[in-house]
Image 1 (tube, rainbow, N blue to C red):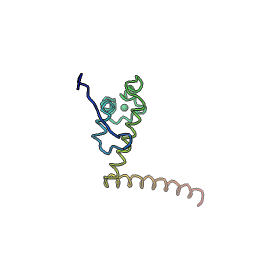
Image 2: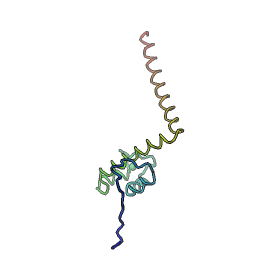
Image 3: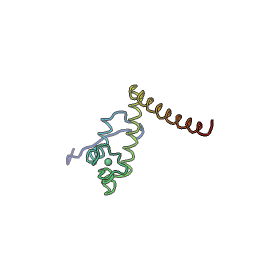
Image 4: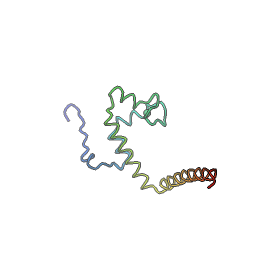
Length: 117
Ligand SMILES: [Zn+2]
């Protein structure tokens, strides 16, 4: 192409609403994914951490809030797909919630016992 411009064609990505492929997510949001390793903490949630590269980019306008939100949205959808296609991850998730519910039930029972049933 003249001037070395690169044409990135993403037909129907919005309409599809789902990119069930992490590589595609990384490729479409290369500017966002490039920022993530720059964050001070490797487990950064990009919400309120100090030294967060995402928050800095949002603040100085080099990353638009809209783009960041669409990245988060696609990432959530991708995580959902991965969970569905990965029985081990799904099972681990169920065990986790079962444990949480068990803890909550134990709390309630304890309270009832204190009140005399
Ligand atoms: Zn961050």
